[in-house]
Image (tube, rainbow, N blue to C red; front, side, top):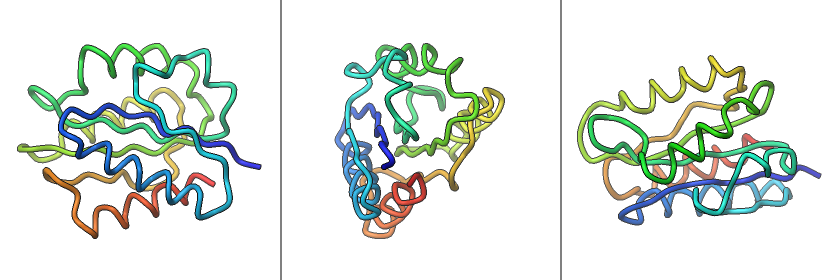
Length: 140
């Protein structure tokens, strides 16, 4: 049975809503899912899961949240080679540069992107939440 970790950081609740939809998608395929915030996850937990969905909004000048998410993700990076992952997050302005940079970083690490990343501007609408459920299902 697949075991998927959905790991996210959310400041306004938008990325958290996306994470919950991702988890629904994982469960719809009959897999086990653990949904945790970035502060609750560490590199030591990578071995316990078959796939990962990482979610973080764009912060500052199109970057990952620097205090909690970035340090956690940087610690996990060396362990993502060959792992199936998916990325998601919300933004308030810009054109998604943070997600393109993040995707590139992950493929450079050898991670396998299971599907197209999901982004949404501000609060996720029904289409964005459906895309998040599909993202979750793609990890199983």
